[in-house]
Picture 1 (cartoon, rainbow, N blue to C red):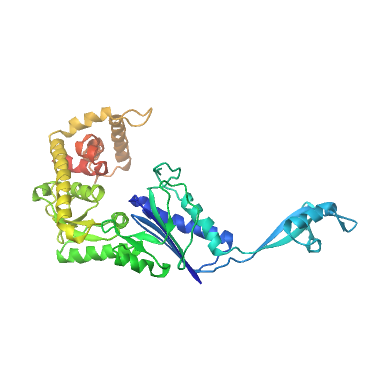
Picture 2: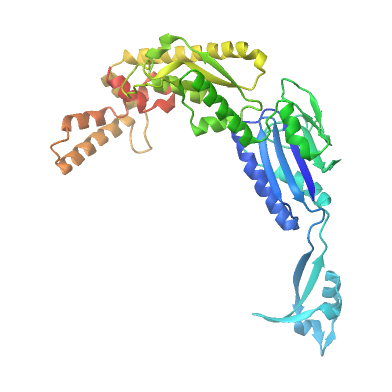
Length: 432
C-alpha cells in the first residue's frame, strides 16, 4: 500500500479560505477517486496560513477494472436473418470485443444490442498526475487573484508545491503560474525561520514540519491553542472570553501558536464591557480576560467589575520577540480604545430626543419612508398590542417609551464606528 503527499505552499491565506479549502479538497478527491475506482484507507486534508496539505494513506497502486455496458443499434439493424450487419460489426469493434460477445436485450423501445467492455484500471500514479492539477484549479473562494504574468487565479500566490508518491516525486503539468512552479520535495519552514525542508517520504512529513515550528494538522493546532489559553488563564486566575468563532479564526491565522499576556490602561475600564470586548475580539483578534467574581449588567457603562486589564494575544512570531510583539499590540489597542472612548463621550453629550430626530435622515426601505417613521409605526403597534393584552401588570408608558427609542443608537457615533454594538449601546446610553 502506498502513500501520497501534496503540499501547496502559498503566501498568507485568508483565514476563511484556509478553513473552507479543507472540505473542498476532501470532496474533490473523493469524487475523482470514486470515478477512477481508486481505493485508499485514509485521507487527511488540512491547512495552515501558508500551506494546503493533502495526505493519502493505503493507496492501491492500480485502480480496479471497470465494467462498462454500452447500448448499441436496434437488433433488427444489427442482425439480418441471424447474420451480423456492418452496424453490429462496427459496434463490436468500437468496444474492442467479438461479435459473439454481443447480446440482445429487451427495452421499453424494443430489442437492442448491448455490449460489455472491461476497461483496465489505470495506475494510481498516472491518475494522480491528472487529478491533482484538476483539484487545485477547481478550488473556490472569494476574491481570487492573478500574480505575475500568469493566467492562473488563486486565493494567494502559490510559491512551491510538494508532490510525493511514497519516496518519489510525482510530477504533473501546472504551468499557468508566473513564476513557474517547480514540483518537488522541498517545503518551507515557519516564515520567520525561512528554511527549506527536504521531505524524503510522506510518512515523516508531519513530524518533520512540527520540528521546524509548523503545526500542520489544524485540529492539533487548535487543541494546542486551547491548552495554552487554559493554562495561562489559570495562572492569572481569570476566565478567557473565547468564542468558537474566534478560536477557529485564530487557528487559521497561525502556524506556530505562541500566547502572550498583555495589558491595557485602567482608564478604559470606564467604557462598557461590550465595547472593550468587541474591539479586542472582532477587530484585533485578542482574547479578553474576565474576572472570576464578575458582576455583569447590560446597562452599566463601566466594565471595572467585569473585565481585567490583562488580555491574551495569540502570536505567530518567535518567542524571543514576545516583548516587542506585546508592546506593539498594546499600542494598537490603546489607539482603538481611545477612539471608542471619544465616540462614547460624544454620544453622552447628545440627548436621546435629539438623536431620535436624526433618524429622519436614515432611509429604511424603498416606499417605506425613513427609520423615524418606522419607529412611529412600532409605537402604534406596541400600543395596540398592549391594549389587546389588557394586562394590568404591564407598564403602558414604559412599553411605548421603549418602542420610541428602540432605534435610537443607529445615529450614535459609537455604533457608526462599531456596527456590531447596535441595540446594545442604545440601552446603555439611554440610562445616562
